[in-house]
Amino acid sequence: MRNSGYFKNKKVTIVGLARSGVACANLLYSLGAIVSVTENKDNAQTREASAKLCSQEISVEMGKHSRNFINNADLVVISPGVPLTSEPIKWAAQFNKPVISEIEVGSILCPARIIAVTGANGKTTVTTLIGCVLKEAKKNVFVCGNIGKPFCGDVGQMQEGDFVLLEVSSFQLEAIKDFKPQIAIILNLTPNHLDRYNNMQEYLDAKKRIFLNQDHDDFLVLNAEDHALSGIKGEANSKVVFFNKRQGFNSNQSAVLCVGKILGLDEGLMLKVFSEFKGIEHRMEELRQIKGVRFINDSKATTADSAVWAINNVNAPIILIAGGRHKGIDYRVILEPARGKVKKAILIGEAKEKIAASLRGEIQIEMSASLEDAVKRAYGLAEPGYTVLFSPMCSSYDMFKDYEERGREFKRIVAELVPKN
Image (cartoon, rainbow, N blue to C red; front, side, top):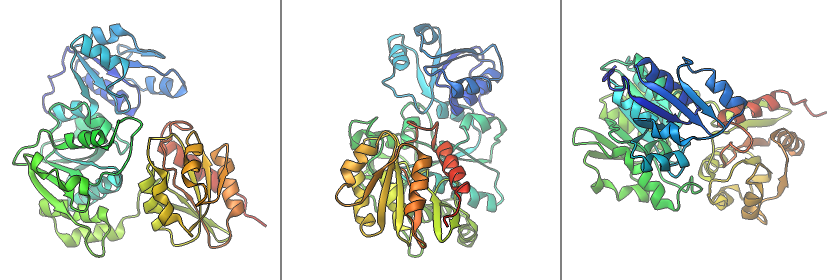
């Protein structure tokens, strides 16, 4: 580990007690920091998270944020879900306390070569695939970040010469300072998180921070077919490489091939990985067929553009289950691919009225009070040869702690369905 003495005796307050907050707190405590955690929620999940802290010497408050937790700190670390407009961050500005993200902490300590992937859609798949390709090339690889494993949870095991694949969100990039990936990848930019950003420019500006600290020895990989990205080449100090969707490959695979070329990897090796890749849990995950009705778990689809991709890749009539917490996006983008294919949309969650207002008149709609009811309705409506597609287009936080819990619940319900007579 690099800079292992950097945090020793520093008073560090971590805002947020999700996975990355717990991992960061435990890591910093092990390095001799004086650690406090503040979390505004007090529920079964946050209490469960608190139990995973490695020492009772880590001060924890739940159900509120207190000014003294910020004022007494030398450094404030924020979890991905904490906006820069939140009260603790405002206090940090008042008290002149530096604020950084969890991935910044990891990067300070990381001896490995960092490859960071961001974008509105496809981040998890591309991050996973590059990791698989490097493992096939006999490299020592860590895959973490927003993909599920916190950077701070693995950084203690990394050594010089290793690779770390990081899926990074715009939220994580907001509070970086010196974070500097050797290869930074921006896959695409489509409307997303407009409940957090005032407009698309703000969202793009957050994404562009991924190459903020790169220099001429680093690489920035951009999607040549995304107009929002094609114009930012001149803003980077790094070597800019564009990827195009290659014939016979989808955009995600084309991005991986581009990164592989930068790393000098054999294309045959990459094609072998593609052919053996079984996909990612909760992303177009095929579950089972019941009496000719296929069920697909696409809980990872938290944007309308992700749902468009899913609809385009189902070659059957669809009963769509969608809904969750609204992120300020336009659901009408699904209308063209859905026309004639989506036979009915069953809507759940806080956003169901907004989605219905966007789709009404084009797609038949039913409202449902729960995911379980929606699945049972969808199965009741589906005919042999149909696909029940769970592609929510929304975040999960109104009903579930994350998209993974939401996907697992969908899988449980489908597994317990009784075949129709």
